[in-house]
Length: 297
Ligand SMILES: Nc1nc2c(ncn2[C@@H]2O[C@H](COP(=O)(O)OP(=O)(O)OP(=O)(O)O)[C@@H](O)[C@H]2O)c(=O)[nH]1
Ligand SMILES: [Zn+2]
Image (tube, rainbow, N blue to C red):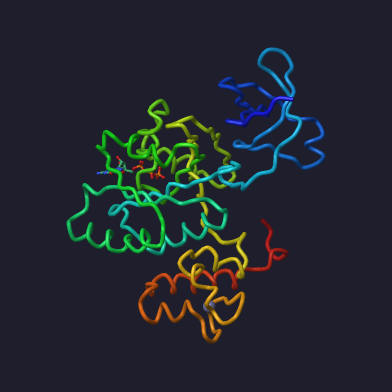
């Protein structure tokens, strides 16, 4: 039976891409009883019925799945940060990195609005970001008038499924319009669409760009840590994770444990203090959240 990938889902139909064609498919009747909900991004097996219609018979195992927007098998997130308007925030950067790493998604940090920044603001942001480059993250600088943005982003987009993410106003729609000119998003449109409340399900579609796929709706509109356990937080700080094998205790959470390699590196300045402070803050947030059975969401 043929296999393909769901590129969009509208009113109960799934549009499955196969060799350049989109086949309009329904899900198998038993999916509902079994609680199987096919998602955009899913690789599926389907049965052909008629020229361009079919039925999805099985959904292949996912590498991950996002909730808002609902999308599966995301490889990469372009994390968009403006240097000014809104001001660059290391707290928000660390928060995005934790959430993205927790889904096993590769982050690429995009810096926008360089043209609006003073030399001092630019220098401050570049210095802060250089640490993230040092620990292995890719950084790209994009500008509103950068005519060659598609070429700049191509090496990152090629062969991957990518979502954009970032705070309101940083320039996500501007970037999406540049990589997907046919989309014609009004800038500011995304926040309006998402602002109507979290129950608004906005249609999401994967588009072919530069040999990869890009989602036309930004991901990670909520940055809570509900899905992350205390023991999982250390691995989402990749700089700490790299040295954690040198901590005295296996499974060290780098809190009060003696002979902790992470705390030693924070003391001698190799890991910036703000990284560790954010780590402690996020750990506290996870510790303080209500147990799941107490919540009514
Ligand atoms: N000067 C300058 N302005 C930019 C740049 N990128 C985006 N903008 C402007 O910043 C404003 C916000 O950009 P959007 O692309 O709407 O931002 P967004 O992240 O999609 O915002 P939401 O829809 O609220 O999530 C718009 O007026 C853009 O024209 C840039 O590199 N330089
Ligand atoms: Zn430790």
